[in-house]
Length: 479
Ligand code: G3H
Image (cartoon, rainbow, N blue to C red; front, side, top):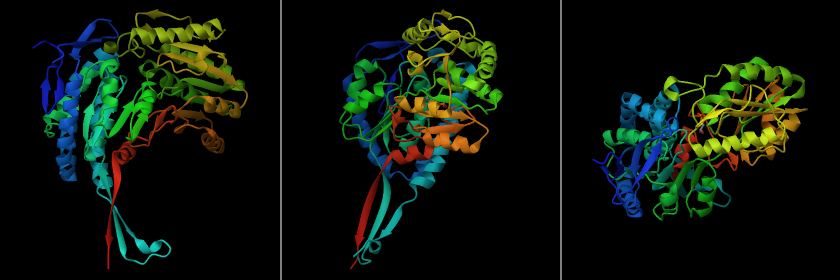
């Protein structure tokens, strides 16, 4: 074989007729670690053709059998967790322990989806006509949930396994076929993960995996007439996808600029602990990372001191050694983060824990105090280990900043006053507000959604299942 990882079509692993490969660069070594096939448009067409046929039969497969299949996948994923996690370490430089956690979390998510799917999809509705004015009781409306058809799933590099299964499992459980386009960084982890679906014996054609540059097959996939739904997680590409997509439902989670509001009465030690974890885990490469701290002036010095202590303790190095801060995903990402930091430096931000330092894609954690609204870091999403702090004179000022952002994913507030917490949460225009904890998507059965440019629709296991079906009514007209 060529040593190039194969793509998946009609139940088989194949080499592309393009004869071309796409290289995956290890962010830590900046050397090529794997190669995947560059799929052609013709191969993508075949994926949609086989998916369409396989989906029809799958939709008729009893729910309990679909659940059984998914439980098998989950068991296989637990069994092969280590090799999948090893790919994550190499492809996206995720710390070794977190990589393993991602795979186990994914197996748990699949099991939960199978169970939830049995209950949720197994229930319909019956309506009588005489509840609407003027109608006799002569019609029965049976409402059921039917699959959408073929779902295009596009997960991002930061959770190539977990954010793939969070799309695949609900789609399949609900009776859909799936075409998966993994991120290039993370494609091989995606391929290993898909092996578990293959080995569990899913019908041929129901699931396929297309590798290749987004710039070459991206539009072809997202604008394909065979697509019945797009489930996408990632950056601004999602906005252009939504503009080009036709009459298909979209489930999207895009960027975030999650703020952490620290009130004057907050438990500062608790807030600092969450700010460090929220701001710097996986080097800030999470859509739900704390990306801006808005702290009450009266406690700012104390909070900044505590956060700085924590930042100094973060280990910086390689993912194999489980360091807290590891190289960011690519050189272009590192350059972008550096640009944001330099902009803040020129405009007078205070470097609390020492000056900026970078080696290759590895950026030492940066804590910036006295950030001002004219700095890019007040608004832009770095996706890197840099945390800006703005001092505010009131919670209202903090909320106003949060609501002026183009993003509205999550946010958090630290206060001991539950009434203040609820008032602030009500005022924040974000999909989720965490009280006294950093933003996070999980546990994975909680609803997860972004407002404004942060997304369309909702996720979380129950909501994802509901987004993978459409409503169908059968009306029985009685004499
Ligand atoms: O990066 C986006 C993810 O959906 C965030 O998930 O909160 O579990 O890190 P997380």
